[in-house]
Length: 262
Length: 226
Image (tube, rainbow over all chains, first blue to last red):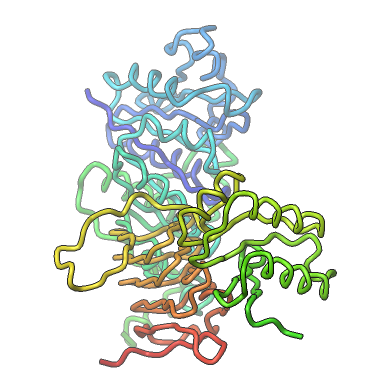
């Protein structure tokens, strides 16, 4: 196996990086891929919570780089999805506990054993972001249809484009509300693409079920957002899955009205 | 009494004092400048000043004594602009800047046709995203967009083959003949020399190629219409 190393980042906090990482990992694993997630958000670890793996953490990534354990001993296997693994972040310490070079070394050890290595980046453009991007083969930018999130995404894309490795960058627009776009109260995906001018790999609708599933520690692949993440996973694997229509919400009457008006 | 031989203007970095060639010899000029400052002490107090002496050669001790005269009045001289190598050398010896904006990389590609007078510039072949900046004493050409949060500061003009949505400053060394043009001129803020303007807030506007220039003491945008 030769793993693809994909870093999920955004610049701005709270746009859904960790949720995206968790959902993509679950989707890829359920599609039969060997997947390992690395939580690069040292000091503020969350990915283990969303994946429901917190209570099984013994060692973390800082223990690995400081030689207290082998990488194998920090890897946790998901209870119900045997193809899904996690290397948790440390909850103590901060981003400076790990260097970009050490991240590259850790990922190098994993490359032969997995199809996908997904790295969950912390917010910001500092050390934590550099740690997360250092071992990447490709980058997924998560943004929301909000000017501040788009501005930060633009900044991050600029930083990645300035990198000599010329990593491929693709965009996920998360937490899209079709009814607000219809009322002209939210940037549409077209508006976002217009500014960021990078290729779009998926649009994820705002979905309460994601929050509920995250609190429960079990991403729900059957929720609306879960289906969008699953489609993104299939696009990552090279399948040609058309982008979802945004307006499949609303009741039957509204949908019929659209059908006849349009 | 206004003294036309010494022009004083506010720039981004503080004050710019431009000494005209008819300001008399150095001693006379310094006397006139001191008088001018003393007339408006409160205005100058604590100011950061850049001095443009044109082609006038100024030697080390002349510049040093001027610096002392200014600092006695709580004015900091931080840059000297001149086309004279004597002046520039003296300024560098005193640890002063000799440009208002950071030097860009060497621009020494000779023109193929030397009959046509050209001006040096920086060509950017990609979109400038948020947080990226270009600073040069020359002109800037961007083949791509200038996104919100990006910044260009140029001594000369700025030409953008794309959308301008970031912040640009043309003629940053005081050149009021500098222009800014873009296929869609919608900057966060646009400056030419000492003038500042912002784009009108109109969401429904159609993209339109425009040129911004200083006309009668303010920045105006004129549509390009073939």
